[in-house]
Length: 408
Image 1 (tube, rainbow, N blue to C red):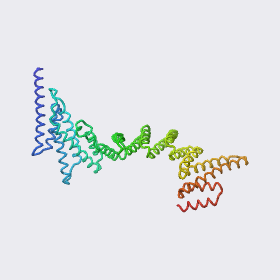
Image 2 (tube, rainbow, N blue to C red; image 1 turned 135 degrees about the vertical axis):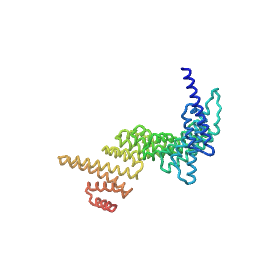
Image 3 (cartoon, rainbow, N blue to C red; image 1 turned 30 degrees about the horizontal axis):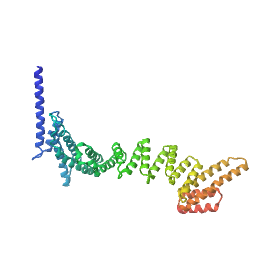
Image 4 (cartoon, rainbow, N blue to C red; image 1 turned 90 degrees about the vertical axis):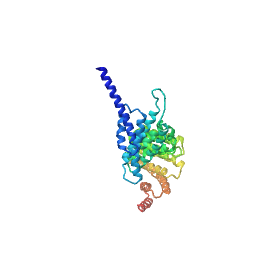
């Protein structure tokens, strides 16, 4: 009984295998007049799922013809300005390219004698070349129809194809289109996710940092992406890399790094980095001004004044340097005036008040300089008016007040 069972089972397998091979042949026959892609698809997909034919190059060769034929049907409708199904078109193109790659893989495998006798090598190279062009253009078609997810899938399939051994002879990776497609994937991915950067966008941003054409934009986007994700380490490292990579034009990255430190209450790290930056480029006024702002926020007015004066020493007509210096003296004077008001001894009070007024006098010097640089800056004018009020100079107070009113 056992022998009979085994024989029957073997016969069933052979019959099944014959049926599936027949499915492959019948599917191929349906590619000729009269063409029946739907019928061919049903037959070949059954063969692709069956173990007896799922590892044969011919199965996938026929499958590629079927899927590409279905893709082309929709493409013809598009070219003739007829209604076409772009989703069906896109899905069949992806399946066709996957089938081409599978043919290349199976065609390169040794037979039962250990020999490699490729049958489809030349044809597959030609088909993959056409497939690459179709992937690029169909992705663009989806993109312009705002089908960003489908565009990402098709362009990603282009990159996958370019990276595969099957397309090695096409040298797609050496073409400028290769990196261009990566940039398109990032753009489509961000649009698909309403401005958010997903894993595929981050992957290709990292890849494109090495390409001079895209490098700067990639660092900017990477910084924004990691910052949004709350990845402090990658955010900081991205900005530091960018600052080194673009030494002659890195103000955006420097400012972003400092702002990131400040927004995350990392003033110590910000000041430490600024000291490093100043050591590398001691003539960059912006570094001193950022330090001045940090010290102002910490109410360390003496340090803020010191940094502002260092900036003025480099660029005397820098508005912000003079404004920050004047503002620091105003704050220092107000603090001193508040302290003086608490002194009960009249002699000591007068002395403390005079010292406070000296701060306002010094503030005027810098604020007037800032006014000469930009006479329309209302914040500076208000500080100047406040200083003249403290000094009891009604004439100058009224002059500044009138100027402010004319600007409103």
